[in-house]
Amino acid sequence: MPRTTPQAHLNAREAQLQQLLLHGMQGDEQAYRAFLSALAVHLRAFLRRRLAGRPHEVEDLLQEVLLAVHNARHTYLPGQPLTAWVQAIARYKLADHWRAFARHEALHEPLDEEQALFASEDDQPQEASRDLGLLLRSLPDRQRLPIQHVKLEGLSVEQTARLTGLSSSAVKVGIHRGLKALAKMIRGKPDNEDH
Amino acid sequence: MKTIDLIGLLAKGEVPGPRHALARRFALALIAGGLGALLLMMAVYGVRADLADVARLPLFWARLALPASLAAAALWLCSRLARPGVNGGVAWVVLALPIVLVWLGGAMALVGAPVESRAELMLGRTWRTCALNIGLLGIPALAAVFWALRGLAPTQLRRAGAAGGLLAGAVATLAYCLHCPEMEVPFWGMWYVLGMALPTVLGALLGPRLLRW
Image (tube, rainbow over all chains, first blue to last red; front, side):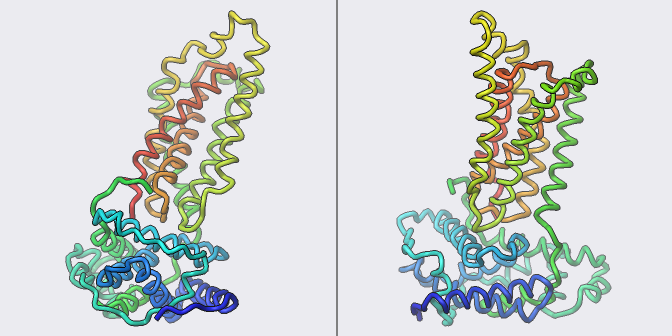
């Protein structure tokens, strides 16, 4: 449930999540999972406020934003305010979402300051209506198999390379491109509008 | 798939990402786009025959300084706009500086010249083609810079597209300077700036369509 939090707590939260992300970017899987999990709780509340009246779309959009955060993680600059970075991604995906369904009238942007992202929490996931697992299975083999083995079954890149006959770098590229292709499949279709 | 499963998937097997991803992409794009503009310039227009002589003139280097400083400012702007949550900020102002300087220099040259030669200073001999030539040379660089931006995460697509277009136009103008015979400041202030504006406008038009992610 949304609740407000004093400034000092928000700053501490920001610093804590920033550390988790930075460790994650250095290859610390645990820290990265903790980062995404904590972020999801805040983003869910953030998106729910902005999709008032359309609660059934919150979880789909949350998954889309998490995927976008993951695909854009190499653009995060250590030292940059994490809130600004995440909110820019979330707003970008929200705008895309509204455009896709031509629902400009639904635009509902609460006037909250930059720190607002970590001020509210929602850890009650709803059922997502779009199944990302299904979409993953429709990727071409050179992307689907690396994601399947490394990301779902937990094999190493080298094991996956041996299993699939791909090179190690092809496995890594396959994962990277596959997750970007997944984002492309789920994002709003109509394009070419002002940002 | 539940959100918690998606998080598990994204985190699983996470390895350190490539370092300096942004700088590497832009470096590759500038090399490819610069080479493209240079080769196209040599193939279509040719390097001016007296290049070795004019290269001794300070004016030759002053002319190169316009697109070089614009390329640097546009690169800075692009690298800012390629990151979510970072605005163009003061980079927009820095961008205006070289243009204002060249316009001031051009105005002074015009004021100091006799009335009957002012048109000549502005139009030179190649005003009909100059801007279009620069626009043509900018096409490979525009493709390369858009490739770089597509691998990053711009959230203001029109602005990022325009900044990328300006970067491409400035790179193209650098190459065109090795061909262009015009050595009058008022000429560059008008036709070089217009030439760089062409890929800038094209970038702004294409940005929302091509840079989505």
